[in-house]
Amino acid sequence: MTALRHGKYPFILAFLLPPVGIYALYMLSPYVQAIYISLTRWSGLSATQTFIGFDNYVEMWNDDQLRTALRNNLILLVVVPVLTLFLGLFFASMLNVGGRRSGQAVTGVRGSSVYKVVYFFPQVLPHAITAIVFAYVFAPSNAGGILNNLLEAVGLGRLTQLWIGEPKYLVWIIVVVMTWGFVGFYVVLFSAAMQSIPRDIYEAALLDGSSRITTFRKVTLPLVWDTVQVGWVYMAIQAMDGFAFVHIMLGVNGGVQGAGDVLGVAIYRAAFAEYDFGYAAAIGVLLLLLTMTIVVLFMRVLRRERVELA
Image (tube, rainbow, N blue to C red; front, side, top):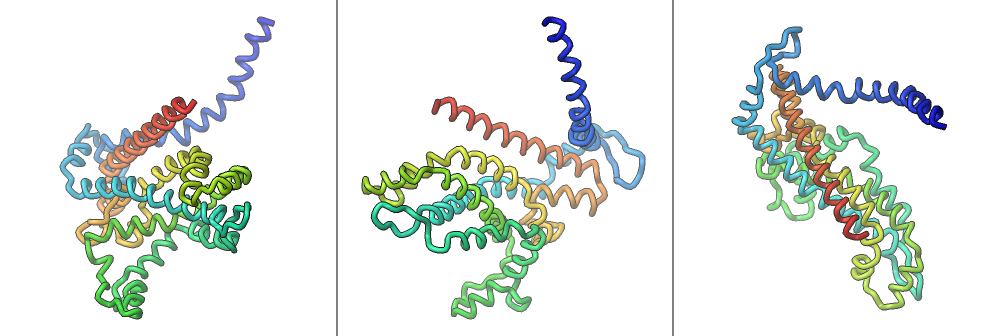
């Protein structure tokens, strides 16, 4: 038995080493290369890389535009997940248990299957298409702006704005677009979680005279909380991106006065507009550290919560 036990470890290693080696080669080595490039001055067009230590990080510290991009990323990180998950829970609850209450039956709204398709539709669109559509939505009236023309058509012309031309609106426009693009996925995700809840629980709550809000707060939310937690982590990672939306809607400079800039666009601009791959890699390392920090914090909080509940 001892011989067999000793013989199984080489057998296991023989199967594990190839996939782990491939993973390290194609997934981990690019991170190591990016960290090294961030310590160099490199145009990306030559074979020579000049080692400059932490000069790129010092430049980042003094870059006001990068501070704007970082601030916008933090706004997206806080606001987009909250809005997306709130709307996802609300719509999923309406689709599954928000219908008319008759007797002891608890159902979703009429036509819920059609609504699920409608809500999920933005998720199947590429981000590029979504960004192009909303660029026309928020365009000026003389450029065919859908929102401004709609406001004028219903007699609210005084509310029209140069939406994409006003720096103070840019980051909030990106918030709206990202929320619209992501909420459908979470409607379907939360709907699947709610469908696994036994109907007997809802019917018991209905017999007890619980209101819709009380039923959601006391029954639905606790029973789908694990799914909400997973969605929160995933949504936080998505919110740290925003590259496609900002780049297509606002341009490589992040819109007027760079007010809509995000870290992903800053990386692209440094690498392919300014040909400073070292600085772009440094921003990429910053984004990696922020993302990993957020994920670790979320996972620790969720783990602590599970321990307390246990």
